[in-house]
Length: 473
Image 1 (cartoon, helix red, strand yellow):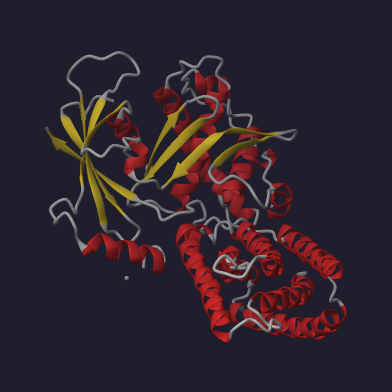
Image 2: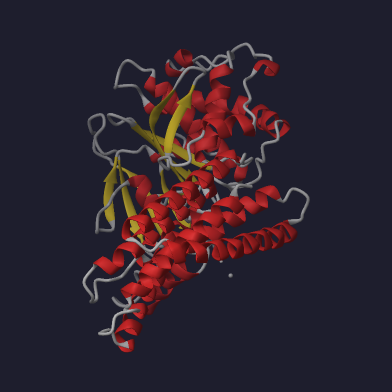
C-alpha cells in the first residue's frame, strides 16, 4: 500500500444534491513518529472561504435545509376512536384554560394565549421536521408510535393547563406536539409498504375514509362521555384509560408490521445471523490476517431470517447507529457506526483552524478501498468501538448495505480479540476480502427471501458523498 507514497490525497465532499461542501487535502508527516501518534495532516478548504465574513448564502442554505427535503432541485381504527374521545376531554380543558366559563377572562387575553400556544407548537414542528426528517422513512415504525406517545403527552398537558395560573406560561400541550406533524410522513412510508399492487392512492383514500368515520363515531360517543364525566377524578380516570388503550393498540399495530427494507436495526439482525451461520467464516483467521480461502458452505444451510421473523426480534425504540450481533441464543452490542458522514466527522478534527492532525492512515485506506464505493475505518475505543463509513459519489444502495455488513463483521472480529493492540488495517483487509466473496450471494439469498434490497434505509440524516483524487505533491 505504498504505491501513492509521493502524492497528496484530495477529497471533494458534496451533499446529496451534488453541491460542493468542502475540499480536504491529506498529506503525511515527514518526521518519524511513534505508533498511534498523528500520522498525517488534513487541510480544509471551505468553498465559502472566499466570501465576505457575513453572507446571506449560509442563511439561505440553512433555511433550505429546514424547509426542503434532502436532495431537493389494522388496529388503527380502534386507536383513533380512543384518541378522539380523549381529544375531546383535553379540548374541554384547553377551553377552560383560555377562560371559557370565567367571568373575569377577556376575549383578547384568550386570543393571545391561543396564538402563543399555536405558534409554539408550529415552531416546534418545523424544528423537529428539520432534525429528523431524513430518518422518518427508514425508522417509520419508531416515529409512527413516538408521534402518538407525544400527542398523548400533549393531551395530558392540556388537561393540566387549567391548573396553571393564567399568564404566558399556560402553553398547554402544543410544544409537546412537534412529532404529531410528522405522523403523516411516517404513516406514508407504512402505507407504501402495504400498497403491494400499485394501489397507494386507493389505500390512502380508504384509510382516510375509515379514520374519518371512526373519528366521527368517536366524537359522537365522546360528546356523551364529556356530558357525564365532569368531575376531576372521573375526567382523569377516563383520560388515562383511553390513552392507555390508545397507546397499547398503536404498539400492537406497529409491532405487527413486517417491513421488508433493511434499516440499521434490521440489517444488524439479518447480516449477523447470516455471518454467524456461515461456517466458511472463521473469526480467528480473520483476526490473524489469514487470507487463504475457506471451504464454502452450502448456502441452503445459511440462516436467512424472513421479514416476519425479524419483526419479532426488532425493537420499536432503539439506539440509532448501534451495531448489534445476533446469535441464536443472545444479542449483544459491538459498538456504534455512522454512515454517509462528512469528512469533518470522519477525521474528527473538530477545530476552528483550517489545518489539523489525524492518526487515520488515509493513503492506506484509499488504496485498500480503491475499487469500493465506500471507505471504512474503525476506532477500537473502550468500552465500545466505533465504525466510520465514508460513501463515495458513485455509491448505490448495495454499497451502503455492503459497507454496513463490513463494519459489523470487522467490529465482531475486534470484539473477539483478547488484546487491545490489534492492527486495524489487517482486520479491514481480511474482512473486506470475506465481504467481497460473500456479499453477492447474500444479496441474492435475501432477495429470494422477499427482502427489498433496493430501498436506501441506512442513512437517517442528510448524507455526504466524497470523490478521491491523487495529486503530485
